[in-house]
Amino acid sequence: MNRIYLDHAATTPTDPRVIEVMLPYFNQTFANPSSIHNLGQQAEKAVETARASLAAMISCKPDEILFTSCGSESDNLALRGSALAAREHQGANQILISPVEHDAIHNTATQLQDLFGFDVKFLPTDEFGRVNPKDVSSRINENTAVISIIHASNEIGTINPITEIGSMCQEREVSFHSDAVQSAAHYPLDVQSLNVDMLSIGAHKFYGPKGIGALYVRRGSKIFPSQTGGSQEFGLRAGTENVPYIIGMVEALRLTRNEHKERYDRLNNLRNHIIDRILESIPDTLLTGHPRERLPNHASFAFKDVDANTLIMFLDMEGYACSSGSACKTGKPEPSATLIQLGLPSNWAMGSLRVTLGKDTTPEEIDSFLSLLPKVVDKVRNLEKMAI
Ligand SMILES: *Cc1c(COP(=O)(O)O)cnc(C)c1O
Image (cartoon, rainbow, N blue to C red; front, side):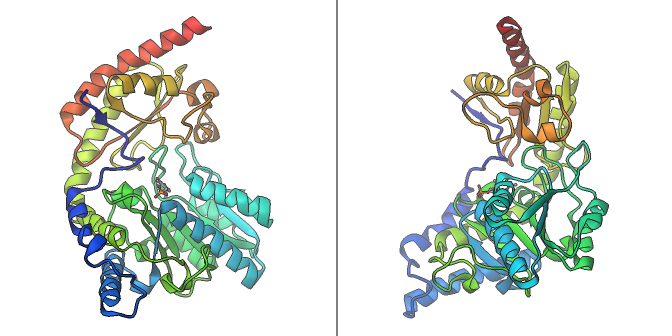
């Protein structure tokens, strides 16, 4: 069967050009970058060249880049590391996050609350999941340890006004982290204009390999390591560097940025077409997330009285790989926590569908998907009526 992949927010295929540049680092320049011998120095040089080139891309210094194992690890290090440091140095105890964070932030905050006694507060959002910078400003106090707000939501695609929020945080001298794991695939991120102290990215969302990520940490930020051991990554992240994956991630980001404009415009047009067609062809359908301020490849919907898991399974049987947008994979159907937060009734929040396009998605694939979807939604709705 010809399978059509419409789940690029979950992961992307590794670009063959990226695999190509990685290969020599598995068995030629393979030595441990911490080794003193010449082979070790060659590997170290490759890592440091990659670090400098990533730093130049996002407008920071090389020693402000930490390589990690994934976007989740970057989020963990940023939130836990800076929360614990802020408490140690200032006695600050409050963590502010948005209600639409990825689990890597949400569940880290929950753990910091449950096991470490931090006070986690959720910022309000509008109906599209956007945080208002004024609400951040009004909630910061002398007890605020760190603020973390997702740049672009993986579930509903909404973009947050990170630059404005960041400038509020700078004024009040509170450490500010943003999870940019989704947005790095679509915007040429610049940590100076975003006004962030920390920024997470993960390679497999922008056609790099899985299992590698990076965290930007502004010089002077107080942060404790969450993985202790050797002195790699400036003592903030122990473990022998994953040289081939570091090389691959930086190449993938370079390609993403070089090809940014053409990818963006093409995806944005294709995505707008999907939104228009689905809203007009399927009754009782809502667009979730922001209508304009959203990732260019991201369309997400809620269908009234549809079970998302059944819908996704039926689409899969027809050869289309989509997602409900929330992490629920198995077990009993649950409405999306994010959509409930945004005020949707549960018979709508149960029926979420996320369609995320990639750089190689074709208009033909989208047309065939768009002609199929109304029938499948109808089928699932009829099944549900029969079950009642
Ligand atoms: C995928 C994703 C992550 C986790 O990244 P991994 O590299 O898979 O650990 C974190 N945040 C967002 C917004 C994501 O989309």
